[in-house]
Image 1 (cartoon, chains in turn green, blue):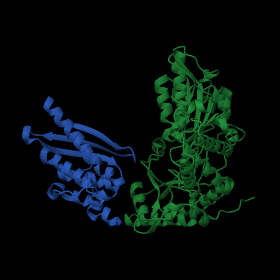
Image 2 (tube, rainbow over the protein chains, first blue to last red):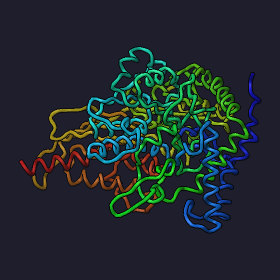
Image 3 (cartoon, chains in turn purple, red):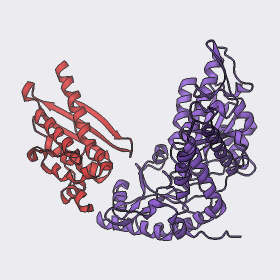
Image 4 (tube, rainbow over the protein chains, first blue to last red):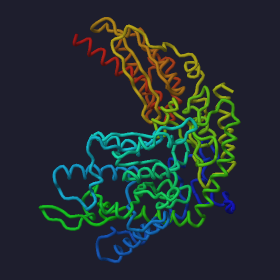
Length: 435
Length: 154
């Protein structure tokens, strides 16, 4: 049964920035939500309201404002948890998804370093201790945020990085040789749920099933999936739950400066801290420190209360519309966009050209025009896209292209926005004399 | 701001028919520069001749990939530095950097030193494209100073 369609013209009104014009009076056609989403009034109002009424450092002080601030911050945590089918104490707030992924990588490094010195570690932390010969598995379609921290971790511990390739259709090369790629030496399998450059939604069931067999930790970069589709972290694909899931707030209508890491409770319990300082301690003496339980163990310093409140409001806004309806809407956009782009001579879609298991993010190249130049012409039409390698340089290298143009959509985009994109690309071809 | 102000005809001409493109021998130094935000890259070689005050740019050759702005800029740069004294070439480089900052400060520019590069004044209005325009010039500056240091130590 098809969900009730979105009233996009009404949704657009909730976003003040979508009312502005750009480049000499052009309507803003915002197709860069993969980089960051725009913010509805509800989020902006919530953040302002928090600062106007309850601002104080959460989890400190005994005055009324401190209480209200703590309650607001923890209420936001509960909303985010419920949004992904998790418990509040399994949700850690970070600066952004990059920090969430680094938190995991540094937990491995810290556990490895402390183990080598015979320092005490939480129960179960052995799985975070790496040695030369251990392996970490990612894919060739990772964002740099889910690649570079693992490369760095390997460089520091002597572990080996291995990866899934990509098929020509832009899908994960997941079946062939999987039992060799993920084996007894594998300690982590960290994969992107929806590729930020290709739009591919990865079917994580197979790799995670194999990861479970060998006892490897299952990590998901969900930056481009959680904002766009219903995601249950305990059932991320075909009954396969993950161990740790990272995503950002600003890509799901929330403020910048807040990211999320969900972790299965027993996994978080076994992890040593990443950043240390205030709030994350249990007891401190000049001789040493013991650490708080999760999630506080991983939230050093005064937290981002206002951003958490804003993210909570974003969750409310998304829930009110319904993630199933948003996913359905984006699927309709995909079914409309793929043929519209394909009808342009000289345009090649980089990524799946079928609408199954893909999101509404479209990378493409145009014969005879560099992506930067396509983007510039689109900008002169008021169409905001991203150009470049999208922090997924190895993916570009796989397809032997220096860069792509990327149009990424969200709940506030409609067919007229797609038409503006198509018109802009045709104009770029005319301007550069390649049509 | 109209698109034509950025993509002036002279820029489009250099983009479609670049001057001096292709790597040549002999050379003193080869450098490889990239623009990490977009992946544009250039490999550039410099051959210096003469000595002391009379050091000249005998050849500068390059190969690369990138947008029209970065490719046209490399071609224009070739015209301005090839066969000139190194002093003159580095002054042209300084002048081009100044041109790229003209969006924020009003400067007297030496049009003779800049040649066709003056057409990039429109690019300076688009902060995201300034790095594209500067890529080849920064690569030349790097290669030339390495080549000079090499000559002085030999």
